[in-house]
Image 1 (cartoon, rainbow, N blue to C red):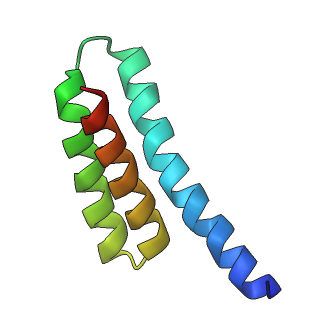
Image 2 (cartoon, one colour):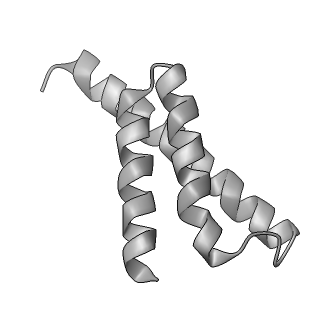
Length: 73
């Protein structure tokens, strides 16, 4: 895999991870502030923002993770 593609992939993973870690941080600081059933929708909102920023890999990951959370309910 060319180095530039690898670097872009890493950047997309990092962008998605920042979103999820931000949610985790908020949940730890404010327990009960978000219901479990709301988490997929928060991830989808974040995915829309990543799309607007051109972070399409991060968008896909966040959408996949939102689907995963919905499947867990």
